[in-house]
Image 1 (tube, rainbow, N blue to C red):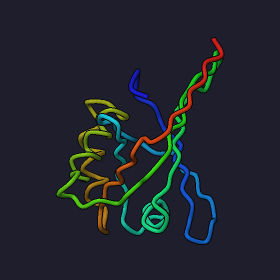
Image 2 (tube, rainbow, N blue to C red):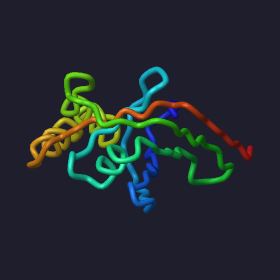
Image 3 (tube, helix red, strand yellow):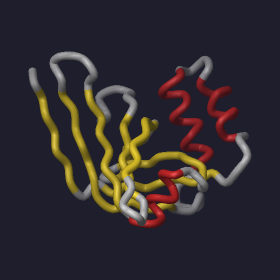
Length: 130
């Protein structure tokens, strides 16, 4: 998950059991994954309702390899993980050092409450078809 910058696919489930999968930027810190989002996003609402997630990060070309992690998830306050600093860091990693800071500022300036998701890596499964 940390070899190079990649897009993850975050799966959550609503309180009613409806699945939801979205592409997402992420940062790994120790045995946790941090994601920036809006408080009213479906992924944040699902995490708040069920506290569960799965995240897949993989190679999209042969030889395929990747990892799926899952476990407990929570929406935390910005005093735990600064969501604005996180989205700026992620924008630089994904968009580049030239355009990333401006893009991070753009995302941070979007109206609404910005929140971090903390995904605890309780389970991991990897594959490698090399």
